[in-house]
Length: 257
Image (tube, rainbow, N blue to C red; front, side, top):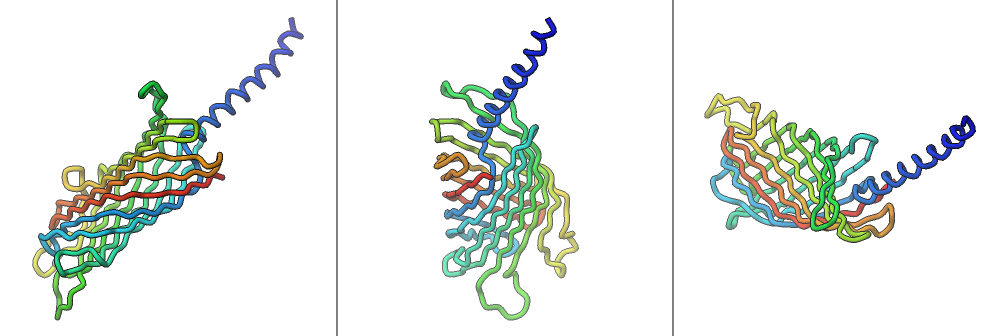
């Protein structure tokens, strides 16, 4: 009887290793880890009432780098993206627009479910984010004028990811990030108002939402490419309203190590 127990110990140990390695492999396929380089292009529109009630629009390129690392109980995300263009226009008036985002989040897996007879996986967790916006009109002025505007949000919110295996090396991936509570900063005219340039903002007064959806193809186990539609929406109402939105097609190259 003792010999049988001694024999079962290495068998159970080997079996647990096989099961664990299968889980890790599945996770690596569905949730690619490593560093990603991203580039995108798309339309952008903004109404910044500190400068003007008119809408400015144009093409705003997208540059990004991100890091994803699965751990035993969660997945860590870190991303930086930057957008800039000097050709955001309203008729003959152009503006330099800068946008910068630093996002960090932790995602936890939810129970998998079936979608069109295939398994889908959802990750959900908290995030912290810094968003910065700067707008400068390209016009000649004498003295002070409303030609520059900036806003910043330091936010806490929710990050979520969806992974759906379409074929053996092809996945469909979706992400949705949105802010819930923010510390907001906004340029104000100190000569005209005593309004504070710093406020705490909720969902009612400020939103920063990013949605992306697209396919990812694995060239190798540790190398993949992705094309996605990305929508970014920002609204700040506590001061002179700021409303911006962009549609982008973004391409990413991910290397895992």
